[in-house]
Image (cartoon, rainbow, N blue to C red; front, side):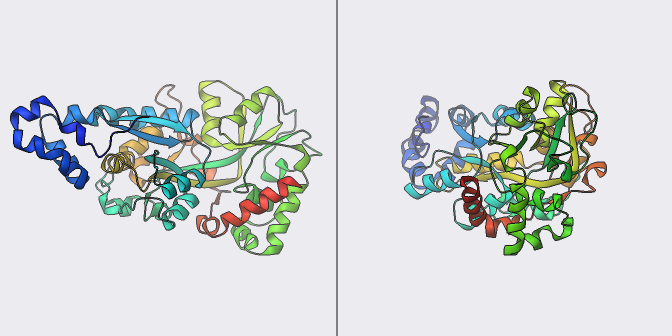
Length: 391
């Protein structure tokens, strides 16, 4: 994608030159020196919207049903209201590509949708632009953003905007008469023979293994904080290792279930919701032991579209934007005031509450992801997981 540097050329418009010839001559130089001022001036001038329409942001996200929900929920509205085009690219998470861009000074991603541990770790490494909570709009009921957003969703580089769950799911048409009902059933190859789908990552898999091995919810991370606990988790994974089909992209688990490639799989609850509601698939979520996680948008340090990127993040973190996403996919908003704005699915009229991971009927046996533990130990666990896979 060709990018325009510092927005200088955007000001050399005939209409502006006629109205303000002196200012038009100076703007390219000012834009290079003071991009923030240039954006502010542009927004105030009659030709500002025409110039903004030439700007493009690159948003990197998770693709599939979630990306579509974001497009319908707030991206299309942001484009209409600002004239800024948003181009979406898919990725599978992690910081490696962002580190490479920032390190060499060639940043071509503007905004990235991230899991919370990577948000925190990347912010600590200086990979993301700080965004103060006071920059964000109040809640739908006027509550200040700092009080409207859940505490575990606030970071120095911006807030999270949704809750999602990694869950166990099965295809009811293929499972047989006995139905899985707990996280332990996922590891039970005798009662439920067949292959299992799991994400190629230690995140969630280590927690699932310990819960299935009998570790209480409130002791999972204390157990993982010991060498014996980590070994215990890998031993449990060993018990099904030769029956695991690994997935990386969120769109894979529903397809694996539909094709009969696996009997059960871990998956993101929103992807399964999409298959259930829009594709009429007979998939059933086992909410027992769900790993409740959160994620949000960050602005990459060194972006050439800083002000537009920050404006996009602020827009996406309004209560309305979060609620509108929740009307297309079953991810709960991190703003308290947004939840009351969600009732039914925007296209099918399906009641959303029973599908939300934070609904009272689903959250009773949820494990909240300890992002601080993963931020501190994620790199080591990734290395150990890679070593374990190679054995």
